[in-house]
Figure 1: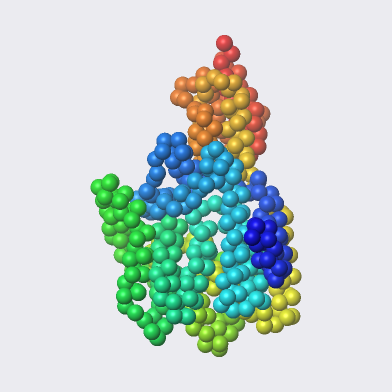
Figure 2: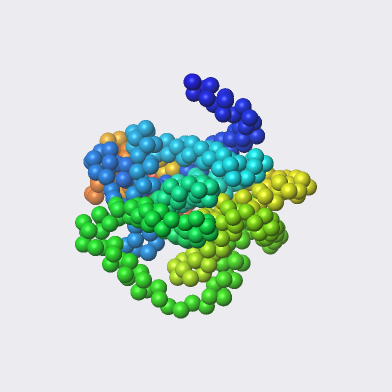
Length: 468
């Protein structure tokens, strides 16, 4: 069977899914050149790819976390060896690689939800994920948190198969949970806990399977353990330091109110409606509440896992002492989407109203999207300096806000032209002032040099050249 024949057979009874995929592809490709960033989160895999393909070294750790001395596992970096290898170490292929993963995620979501529920729920759920501009933004962001949703689908499917009596899927699920917790975000441990609690709800449990599942989960820490031993227990010492700094008492009720009012529900509201306003806050809350009501009334043990999932993650963050950005609740998006889908398939009028508002808000956000902080501008800036220096040595100074000056050093390395201290030409990246003012102040600072502003796209590049 050829690929065309397989594709035709696969989609012959899935026309709604095909339409959803085409819509998702259009929304993801639209303005992709403006949407792909290249900041700290993106340059880490770029550096790892350079080390792998050029220096033939492979890293055992990934990105450093906000708590200094903590690192993710290496899988997110390793995944990007594929697009960097295809594009000769240039980041150009990366956003399209993630688009492909996004399309595959939609297909997997559809198939899994259809398996555990029905075709209507699967169609609605996959459409929400495909069209939500927040989902598209997560994908375009190209960071490890993006894979939490795909990992969540894996957990749900494994639990479904486990409840059918297939014990090996508890092991597979634990392994997936370990992959996500170690390599994508450590807070996924709360989803792992929800998975474990739900697994205990099955009447026929085998202790041996749970022990093997624990080993499967912990196996994902192997690269970090090897790195720790090779670097004088640095990760273990940092863990002890983290624990000692997070033993202070907390007002748990205030934390509950804060997470509910300021973090979780606004996050879901923005995911569905691109708005965190009070009106959409209550609409989102009503959808979730009615979804929970339907699940409780159904007494379906797998659906109950969705409620357990949300509750365990929420309670986990109440006791979590670190900073809690709203995207930490991305790990609960799958149960939220399924709960919303169950509500929408029950009432046609609600479905029509939701569909109109959902499509309008999210497609409008996609059309109006604009940012000046992206890979294209950074690549153009680097190419401008390389071309303008005409083979001569150069140095670069960055007079940019801290959050905006990342990525350039990696691009110079990938484009095989590195700045040098004391280079013949000097280039200064500026952010705020007008080109005329920049030329004026730098000409005063370098009266014997030729000064001009030759690049004016978000960043402004001041070139200082010797006239001799």
